[in-house]
Image (tube, rainbow, N blue to C red; front, side):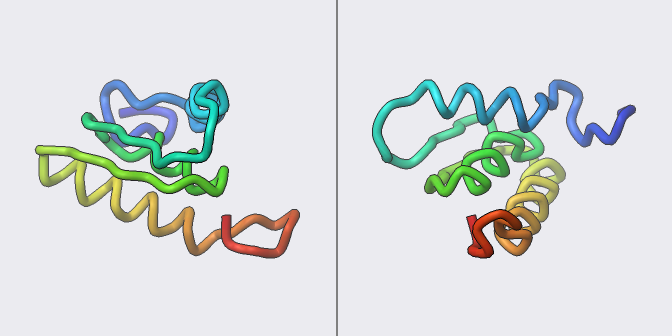
Length: 82
């Protein structure tokens, strides 16, 4: 992979935030093909709950690490974990 991508079809977090923003309401975001977890990172950064499913152990591990890192990062603008 190039440009920091950890999955062949990895999307930018900014794009996934836009997609999540199109979903009205405050329910959990479900990604049944989680890949490297970009949707999960975006959901966490937006303060949304996230459920992800990935059958490939390598990508599941990558996604878990990215999402955990996003949870630890928090939101610098509010001072709270996003």
